[in-house]
Image (cartoon, rainbow, N blue to C red; front, side, top):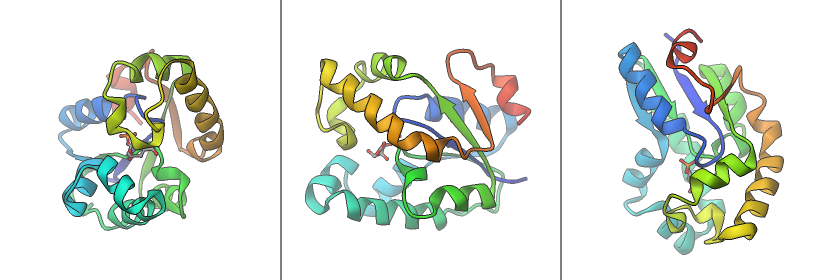
Length: 165
Ligand code: S3P
């Protein structure tokens, strides 16, 4: 059984759906951010501050490609994972990819309810500045996300749709 990589912007529901899908289909669930935190020994936000984003992207890509995938696995990736190096092509060659699409306003509504400080890619922004940043980042990332083999909308998604992919 090929691994399933869940991709999409921060706050798009990858981890929540990933856990549900893995439970329902009796596959192992892996949260790439969690594996990275274990590898670097500190929160991702701290790593960004200490070593910068470019260093994080190297660790992220290496960790992705070293995941143990011999068992049936569902992997929730980070919002930027598909957009660096050849990560998107690698995921498409290695397994199935599912893009969780949500429009910027819906992402914003969800993200403002979370701890923004723990998401260094959002640079501690709030309010309209945050919405503008989400909108422009999503636009920059869309050409990568849309290379996914499947595209789903978190708001209207049913678990059975995911199971059947
Ligand atoms: C990032 C998303 C985060 C994490 C890192 C960078 C991004 O993952 O990998 O903070 O650039 O979009 P989530 O999408 O799980 O929040």
